[in-house]
Length: 303
Image 1 (tube, one colour):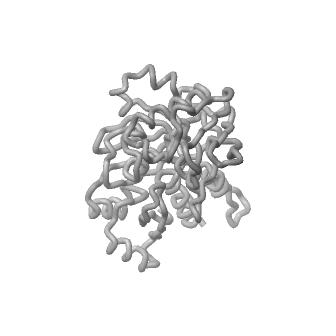
Image 2 (cartoon, helix red, strand yellow; image 1 turned 90 degrees about the horizontal axis):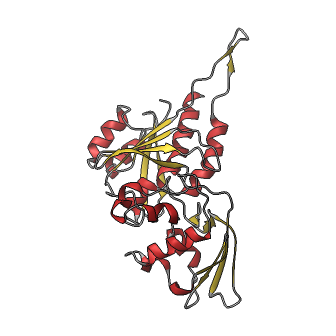
Image 3 (tube, one colour; image 1 turned 45 degrees about the vertical axis):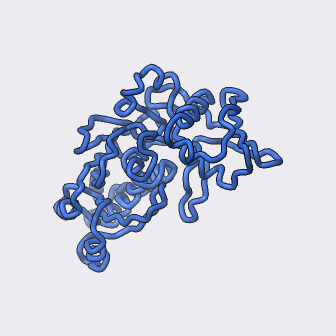
């Protein structure tokens, strides 16, 4: 039973790191349900459960080199900071259809050229400040002036406006069939905090609304993501440790010896060996990242 619980736990933690923040929110509930209850032995006495795993160690191959989501708005960056930042919408499971994350309700105008969104209330940034419409407008301005502008569609940038503290109107120059998909690229960052930090320091001091916040890190080596206790849904994990291991053979050795819980950069041949050996204590799980690139992840079972 312990092995099954651990396998399920680690499989779910995969979504915390590599899929999208929404998946992380959904996963936490299941993780709570899979925590081992107290069990009775043959004498009828109750034994204490084994403590739930509180740290997840993950290996990725490439260091994005920045904690600012708009420096590396692609798969390489998202592998590291997916649990730290949240977007207005995120790719859903299965068909990847966008689902609201920081949005409570939304509607398009009759001509489909204006999208009005109402934000969730009570969403906190990692410094404790509440997210409001002004932070969304600020984030639109940041991405407008970055190299990622093209990833947002045909927006009428100068006409985006806040109708009140929680309502934002987003106009488009033409009908956008992928409008909600584009908004999966808009990771909300706080205006007041970010404007207090010199822009050249955003790469090491950016914050978001995700379930984990930045801890200590050594660029090119290891990043610590710490649980954000102000998050709207409690998380079981205290820490996610992301190690940068470019060599796939080293990742494989670290996985087999328990140095990491999840390897995200293995060679296809090694993945096939893990997949074909039903008795090695490992399982292989295919997953789509936000960038919709298919990766294969290997995680341990019953450690």
